Length: 194
Image 1 (cartoon, rainbow, N blue to C red):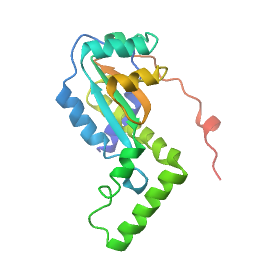
Image 2 (cartoon, one colour):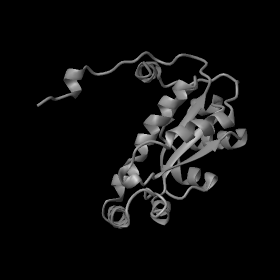
Image 3 (cartoon, one colour):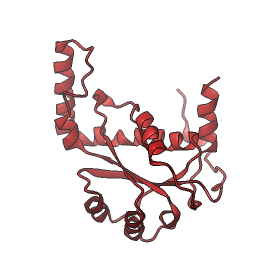
C-alpha cells in the first residue's frame, strides 16, 4: 500500500546537521517543490514562496547570519520558505479555481481579501503546512534536512531579496550521519479524546 511509504518517511525523517560533499541536484529540488506546492491552504491562497540557494558564497553568508549554525557549513542546498501576503493579494484572482461559478469566485475572493485584512496571520501560518510537506518530500527522495530558526532575518531577506516573512530556513543535503533517534512525548501527554 502506498500509504505505508508516507508513514515510513514520517518515521525515518530526522533532523540531520552534518552533510556529505555530494551535491543535491537543483532540478530534483525543483521537482520536490513542485510536489510540495500541492499542500492545502485556506481559500487556496498558497501563501508560501521558496528560494533555493545552491551558491556556496550565499550559503556561507547564511551561515554567518545564523550565528554559525554548523548545518549550514556543510549543506549543499538551502531552501528558504517564506510567506508573501502582498503577493497573495496580487494573485487573488489566479488562485480561484477555474471550475467555480462566478458567484463562488466572487465570495471566495472577498473572503480571502477580508482574511488578509483582518487576520493575516491565519494565512501566513499556513506556510507551515508546506514546511511539513517539504520535510517529508525531501526524506522520500533520500535527502536529509533540518529546519532552522535563529537568523538575522533582515540580513537574510536583503541577501535573498525576500518580500514577506521568513518561516523557516531548511539546510539540506545527503546526511553524513543519521541524526538523533526519535524522542517524543507519549500520546497520553499530547492527545485528549472526547
